[in-house]
Image 1 (spheres, rainbow, N blue to C red):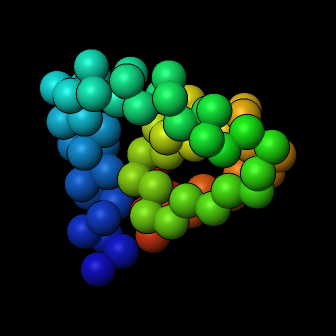
Image 2: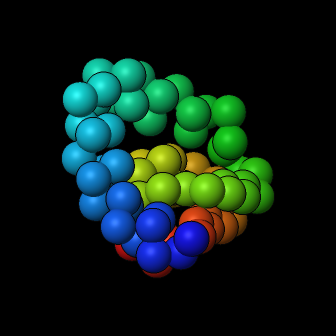
Length: 68
């Protein structure tokens, strides 16, 4: 199973670019909701959410089954 997720991780990251406007909208609004809070993101995929909004949290842990 892990090899499957490792295979799809780079593809998933590229596919997310098609919805860039939606992600930009989320990245602009989520920080005000998580400001100063401890956050845990499970099944983070390529980790884009944590990378874009983690600065607002007092602590951000993001994990995924695939290391990619």
